[in-house]
Amino acid sequence: MRLFLTPLMLLTAGPALAHPGHLGELGGHDHWIALGGIAIAGAIALWGIRKKAKDAQGAKVEEDTAEGDAEDATA
Image (cartoon, rainbow, N blue to C red; front, side, top):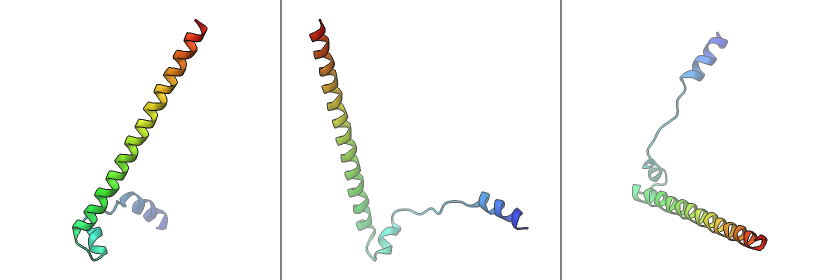
């Protein structure tokens, strides 16, 4: 019986879903505080992505410049 129920239970399991508004209730605060925290975290994440993209673009420009200088030196 155990060999039958275990796969059945594993196949019927699903994730628990909740919206971020419940986070504020856990801390005893209003939903706005949780929303502000999520907004700040999102802004920090976007800032990091932009910084990483800018650094990658700067590295590509330096690489292209170095290749151009090498071609000029051999010509």
